[in-house]
Image (cartoon, rainbow, N blue to C red; front, side):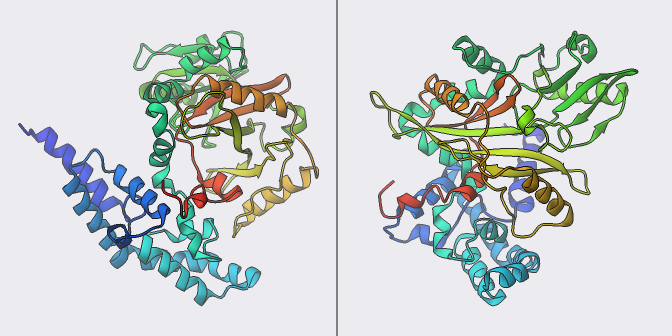
Length: 425
């Protein structure tokens, strides 16, 4: 029997899906309902349809049609206008593609596939809109990873393991993988203990949720002459004991909380970080086949480094991404966005000046070997992204990610569906 609580919950969900969303979930096109031979269309249709698996199918279809109409009739034109105003003149001046040609491209992608103009510029689709289906978009990420691991029994247990940082660290450390030490672990909604007591003799710590969730609530803390101070992962300063205690209490309300030593960057990389915040190195590994086989090898799919380079005027973190050559560990030039404001431009210039041409990361072969060794312990996940910190004593693993983001890797390489143009999925 439906109660008021159930009706209220349904109302909140419908409000989120039908009012707060501006576009369908993923790519949606009338071409889904017509015969075609392009396997990429089949895959995008699959990713879109999979996102509605918790809904009655007819309800989901009606909701998606409503969102398609809202995007085409209400939200698309303002989105095109804002994107063209920001990027159009720069593209016209630097690449010689007229604003009119960009308008035609954006309109084609938006009308046919509901692709947001920001994605069109991010993947440089204005150069060749026929490449649009080669990319996996943010809303499709989880469905893409599920599809890739489908022949490996879907890996539900392994997904839970990768989301549980404590359990993953115990498994990997048992096999000799260097993982970050956990000083203390406080169960969710457990009786709150002062952070200073859990730190022991350690002067600087990093506090985060055991299940990750993109760093929500995470912060660093350190001892001062008057107690504790710190900084949130978002850049907000925690000036005193009271601010740190408030952040610690809020974190403990979210999930099981971990207290770990605050890692230090390798001396060769330390100058790149704006304020000493750790530089993360992400390495994505994957099995060479999409199905289990004997003597199957692992390969390094892509790698890049995320450099904390400061903060924007609204205090949000400013990170600069630099690609890494997977065979040698050589750093490439930082990723160059189409338009850079002055804050980003200054940070980008500083990083470029500090990077030596041809510089290779320390401990690279060791880091890659550890990543592949870790993946061999989790054979039912097709691809995993491993986050590392290069410290003075060697690489330290922070976590593994199963539904890892695909935007940056595709910007650095190419669309992950490019090879599926004519082959069946």
